[in-house]
Amino acid sequence: MISFLDAWQRKKIEAFPGRVQEKLDAFHLAALKETVSHAKARSRFYATHLKDANPFNSLHEFTALPFTLPAHIRENSLAFLCVSLDEVSRIMTLETSGTTAPPKRIFFTRQDLEATLEFFSLVLSQLTRPAEKALILLPATTPAGAGDLLNTAMARIGGQGLVPGPAMDFNHTLDILFTHTPSVIIGMPVQVLALGESAKAQNRQTGFLRHAVLTADYVSPALTSRVSDSLGCRIWDHYGMTETGFGGGMDCFAHEGYHLRETDLYFEIIDPDTGAPAPPGQWGEIVVTTLNRLAMPLIRYRTGDMSRFLPDPCPCGSAFKRLAPVRYRYAGLISLSNGSVLGMPDLDDAFFRIPGVVDFHAALSRDPETPRLDITLKALDPSGIQNVDIQKYLSHSPVLQNALETGVLHLGPLRVELFEFVDTYRSKRKIHLETR
Ligand SMILES: [Zn+2]
Image (cartoon, rainbow, N blue to C red; front, side, top):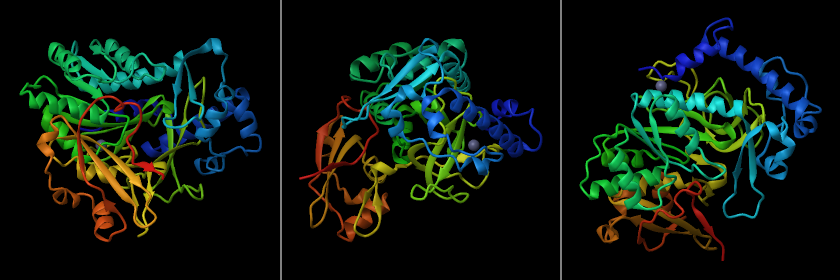
């Protein structure tokens, strides 16, 4: 089955001539021109930032425009505004965890939110039948909540959203799950895994669930198979961020990368060191430009996420681009003395294989001799994994295994703790650096 985004996007570009990719290129060029002219004319930031930018007549020439950085938004979000505050329908505030940096504020008009609602409605209408329910474990009441937009989208397609917010307590969330029997669950990977394992441990059947959409953090294949095993449903991986108006892309039945929301967003991959466009198919940093956004267009925004465009057509037959699963963020990578780099996803590949582990904390102490990695496994029943033979699982992460075997990294004594939901939803999981 072809990605359901295809038909939706083909319709939006049908006025342009040529084959699908030519139509899309022409659509993008027109939308980018409009976005840049709107931003330059109305936003104080872009009036200055793009003052010396040349007009562009091709997607290649567009890449000469300067990047927008997260720091630009933090410095002065209001300078990005292209509409009056009266026209702003919602402000999303993004705190940067663990720092005193000012928060990023992202502004949306009603029409901007409408574009996200259209995308969410499309996704949810593919996953649910009329009158079905979706359990949405994402913030609905905080200023950065995607939960209530998903809830609105469910209502629009004739279904019902259940939005308790991120899971904070097993009994409460399981009560909602088994009382309302939703057909879809949407949440952060670790939270959904913990709920699935908990239901399984209690021998409670979740046959009513058909789909789980995992979002807001990297989804390791090891975690995917654990969630699928515990909840008995199909797993979907969604990529997006507040800056993109949440929805960014979603994998298809082939589960080989994301199909992108290409008529609302323009994606590029760049070399993070030089800023030059990455050669086709090469890894680099994802840069995104919002299209048709009124309140706060972002032009060539550096996301810090690493990926690449997959060169081969998707097995589903989609005519559009595919982005490889976003595995790393540049900021989260640790350079080892053997030249390799280690990120949280490398650890996920090994530690989520361990039966019973639903999360883990990783801390790296920068010992002058050899850095030591301290792992605290989190489980619903810590006694069940006290004597785990960790060696068995390391081969699932070649980078980690190689670093340990060659002695550039040491593993501290493994600790096991009881899993708690607290702090499992505030930010993406990462290796914590301990300075001494
Ligand atoms: Zn596909």
